[in-house]
Length: 106
Image 1 (tube, rainbow, N blue to C red):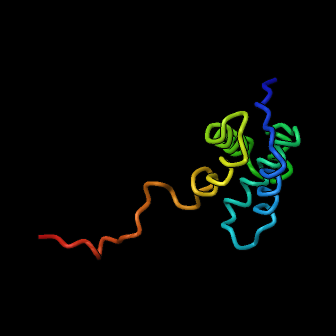
Image 2: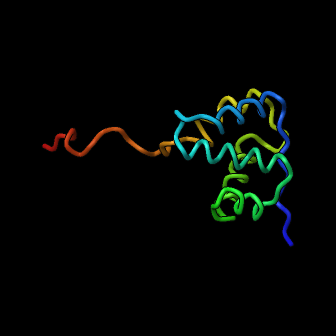
Image 3: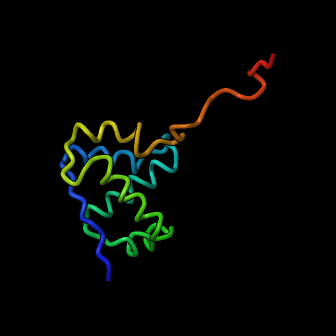
């Protein structure tokens, strides 16, 4: 059986993620990812988290990997402040705000 990498959080990170997990104004995607990371930090495996949140284990695995990639295994609290802009981004980095109607063709 494959065991997912452990996530350890500082008290600041824990507090920020708990606030995001309870938020009603953040996008649902951000709230879900915060819940995934919190459950992973408690030592739960991907299948357990997936069953608790009613999502696929692959989604949990991707979120865990993304969090570990961006923050590193030994993340500091200063890196967590950038998570909302990078790992938990509601809009993809490559998305644009312009539409084809605003583009002028010669």
